[in-house]
Length: 85
Image (cartoon, rainbow, N blue to C red; front, side):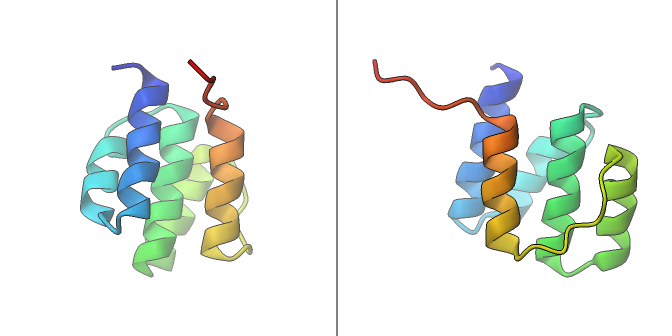
């Protein structure tokens, strides 16, 4: 599985309301997209302290966007558009 495939699964789990499955797919991965998504997940969870920790670790500012707007931004930032096959 490529890193992008794993990140797509994270978003699929989020869309399905499966926070823990999404978290498992980013936990322990030190790359920027995983760390940034880890921060986003802790915002969703309502754990602001932990979210701030992960935003700092990712080197990005704490998001003031709504959860849905931030998720859309993260998808555009870290996923390439799917090509028609």
